[in-house]
Image (cartoon, rainbow, N blue to C red):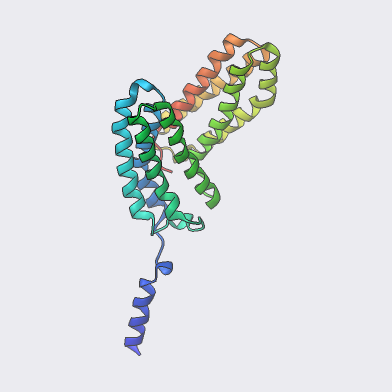
Length: 240
């Protein structure tokens, strides 16, 4: 009887579907370094003059993410266990990095930047599908609202249109920034986070005021300050 029990226990442990899942908290710590390299890759590929620096960092990103994917592809973090084809999805950023690297070496810096965006959206989708709340995704939400506002100001800076933008999207932008502020407990550097949030609050209040006035020049400066706050926030180190 004892021999049968031991054999059954060994069989249980060897069955891939029955292995104990890894901890999500451990995963969030392990992802910080490769995701940090990813964010640096995005920043460098936003300017064509950074091509050579970008190549170095993207290569580091590919290596770091490859190690992360190797560790978790077949050991899905518990809170992400509902995601279909987790292995394929966690490996995808490595392929994206390699594709972006080829673009960089061909001198297609802006194309590489756009291609790298897939990683951010892929991770966003995985966490959303799994019901995981992350500061990164709150930042992504704000980015979407900000991009619409920026695009609107650039497309038509007439007083009437600027006033329409303020009425249509101003409150949305403010709400998305407020949602970020409420997830501040996940930030490592709380003082830096508080400063960025305050700067963003001020920029959004200023933007709202100048949009009401229909002042094109002031609106351009104000949205620039909003974007600066967003960029500062995007590069703050955080834990999940």
